[in-house]
Amino acid sequence: MLFYDYTLEMLENYFSERDENKAKAKILYKALYRNGLRLSDITELSEKTKAIIADDFSFELPAEAALHDDGETAKVLLRLSDGSMVETVLMRHGYNTGVCVSTQVGCSMGCTFCQSGRMKKIRSLTAGEIVSQVLYMSKRFGNIGHISVMGIGEPLDNFDNVKAFMEIASSPYGLSLGGRHITLSTCGIVPYIKRLDEVKCGFNLAISLHSADSAIRSEIMPVNRRWGIDELIKTVKEYSEKNKQRIAFEYILIDKLNDSAEQAEKLAALVKDINCFVNLIPYNPTENSEYRRSENADVFFDVLKKRGINAIFRREFGGSIKAACGQLCAECAEHAEYAECGK
Ligand code: SF4
Image 1 (spheres, rainbow, N blue to C red):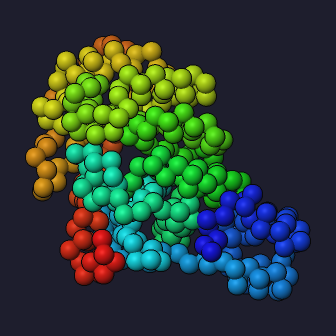
Image 2: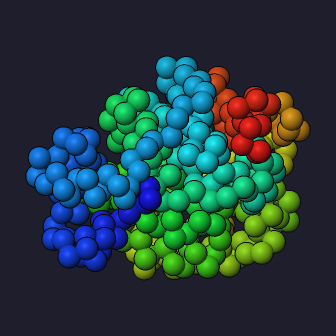
Image 3: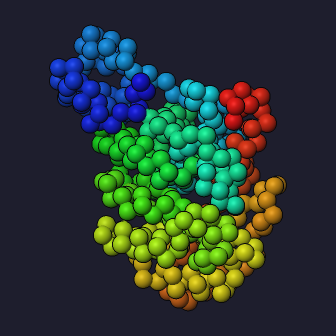
């Protein structure tokens, strides 16, 4: 069993089922996650208890298969225990360091602007495999101040494991990041957005919108054919009001596709009654995509401002190291080591 798959409650149950004091769960959690100790170094647990834990659990972290680091962004390809590859990105902001984790091997959502959408989902990651990305990056690069659940994969297509991950990440005995330091982004799987208040840590919610026009959104995000814009916006508004949360709408500006003044007007009308802001993201062009970066971004931004919508241009990270979602993995598909695991 991978230790990092266990939430604190699961670990308490593990000890209770063995007629052991469940307080050992907190001791173990705190020592490993907070204090960075190895099992053998924990003095508050008996040698007998440690031997049982060592027998039952694996504490293995993924192995680094490739690294691209431009000093500002480090993109790491990690090999999991079954040989599957995931990518994890470190972003060095001036004020803190954030990590962007993957939640699936590949993704079946098929967004046309995304490299991961072309890789197809192989499987979902366990909670522990997501936790171990954060642990690996923190061991490799130092303290992590923010987690973005925005890497490869659709988090809400892996709801239970992502929920457990968020619990471990925000537990004061676990990774100990307050909810406001965790951001989850979804392409809009409505039934699971409705269940997001099961995650109690008060995290930030981002919605990958990318168009306010139903036909265009269905063209670039197939998920929109299943849960259309109106249903999505209604659900997000309810979530925002119930949880008193400000929502981020992500919007990649793609040349002559979703970047006209008319599209900006539509976007403003769609989100005007929601406590939100719009993150405008420059498209990061790739070799095998016909999409180009917008040249109309300023006009788009001005329309939103005129309509009273909070909008910001998201700072670009990693253009020089192919940090756009999925690009490193796609490159590595040609590597023998990647082919070995059959992806
Ligand atoms: S943008 Fe996100 S949901 Fe869409 S294909 Fe890429 S990883 Fe999947």
